Length: 323
Ligand SMILES: [Fe+2]
Image 1 (cartoon, protein in one colour):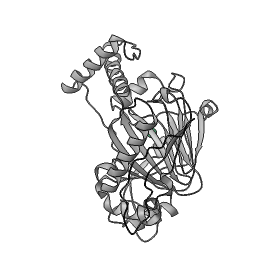
Image 2 (cartoon, helix red, strand yellow):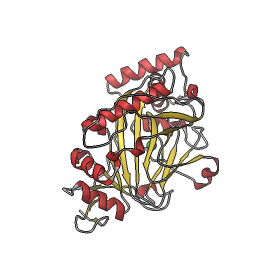
Image 3 (cartoon, helix red, strand yellow):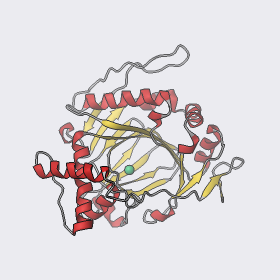
């Protein structure tokens, strides 16, 4: 596979070494299958000093504290109800990082590109490189999330509405991606996520792991998987830092809206609709119907906001206190 240099300039400062370009290279898969197949890439973002402990502590101090996702979870991959949300309070970025090192915590800085200028620049660079690496790719609704998580932490079996790519920066994690077939996830369940009826987490059977595409992500690796494919993630025995890009493409936005309409048809009319893609005219009709339904607020979104269940202890890193 030819290496694709993305030659995107990054501002340099006199005090800090910053690479002048980032590299992104497809290492496995067919770029024409982007969004529909599992693709692997190599990148070099993990070499940047912005991701060392001092850089992450500064990021945690700069990111709006009220938006910071703080979570903990149990060890059983089936027990998704053990996923709990907490409060970071006024802990410093360095304190939070110490908690990640010592405890079982998952920090999620969603849309860091909307709140921290350095990450806005980074997102532009990453999406630019991604579009350069995949001919014809056009992305929008761009969200760069930063995931800072404890040794052995996990994210349970779930699926996401937009396209996702996961860029490993520090540590090692295992990503398992499962087929979108009904044997792993029912159409009604995918629709439930798109309609925001339920939490994104789904019932899981460990026997499915034998049929999953399993990849151990190491620093410098990136993976992207088919839209709405169920997946789960398990950290190795070390602190992990990953970047999560969520985004839409025209095809992804069409699919999400077709599923949205399918969900309404199934729930309100008892239909068992299939997912069509362009240029099938039924897809465009469903796309239009979804836009109208959203404008008219026909579907009542239940949301899935967890109530905070713990707070972090400033004096004992990684310890969880009751509220
Ligand atoms: Fe996900």
